[in-house]
Amino acid sequence: MLSLRDLEVLGDGGWLRKAETFSIAFRAIFLAYLLIVCVLQLTATYFSALMQGVAKNAKVDWILVAVVRPDVISIPEALVLSILTSIYSGMIYWFYLVGLLLLFMMANDFYEVFRCLNV
Image (cartoon, rainbow, N blue to C red; front, side, top):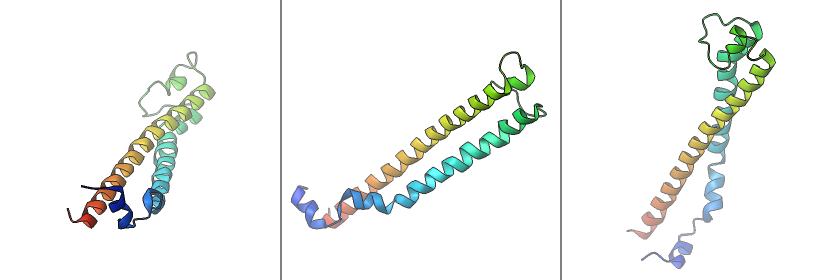
């Protein structure tokens, strides 16, 4: 049976040390969230069409409706809405990826504990 004393013998330094070893991965996830979701999605899909005022080949959705129907929503309002939705969707991706990393950390910790106990 696994006891607290057995875990102290393992000398793994605690959960905080394990979390610090994954700090680079957490930062990489955050940078990927900023670059891919916020910047690329916003500029590639919406920003250029809203700033030029022409939808060209872009699919008209609830943000680009400002170009086609300016009486419904203005372009500055659509820009603010586009930025907010991009941040929201990026945060959802960030939560999923950080959760996946935390699950990996817990599984790795579980593996190391039982490997040291020879179970």
